[in-house]
Image 1: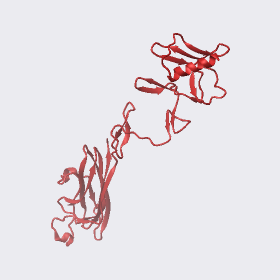
Image 2 (image 1 turned 60 degrees about the horizontal axis):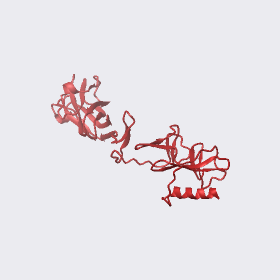
Image 3 (image 1 turned 45 degrees about the horizontal axis):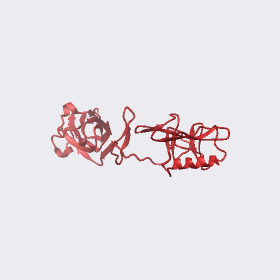
Image 4 (image 1 turned 120 degrees about the vertical axis):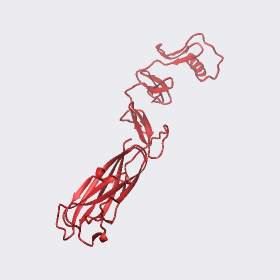
Length: 290
């Protein structure tokens, strides 16, 4: 009867149904062997409830609160003792534990079965999380490689003065490296040794003597029938800002020996080598550097 009365008083204290009782001493519940089962102590302006640990769970733990090996359980499930709070920081008490969300056996410090949503640091479409030197990640804009192509059937009789063969443009989102390539074939229609020069430039008025990339020759082949030479050149450029960039393919003819056959180039006196460029294509590729 005495134990039931004490338990009744304890329940009132725990659940706050009556707040007019004042105890000058601790309230304890013991078993018949004087083992302490539960204790309520006076902590000044508040009280504290303590349960000494046992070495095993109750035989029927359903709907029971108990302390086993200094771990608190309710209804056979551990009560939030794996986390600790320090100021505004919350962390695992045992640094060797793993955290699982949607999984019961996490295989890493954090394993999530589901989608992750991170709304800090201005997220946007196609951005990626990028880490700094300290491992702190933030959303960064993705600068992907880009390319453009210009080509198709084309025929151009070369003159001694530089001629614009083709141009290609590209818009880039940030600083990077741009590679420009050009390819086609040459039809040698003059006699003797003929040559032509090619230049890829970012200028609309290039200096061929200083900036040509290659000088192609027919090595004095016999030109009584058409002779063909395939060619390809490329050049790299660096760009420091976003924007539109245009690149030009220039060519000029150079007769070394011999004379041009009559009738070629429509009788143009400046058509010295009577060399024709055909099927010229240009393509441009961009790689970001930031």
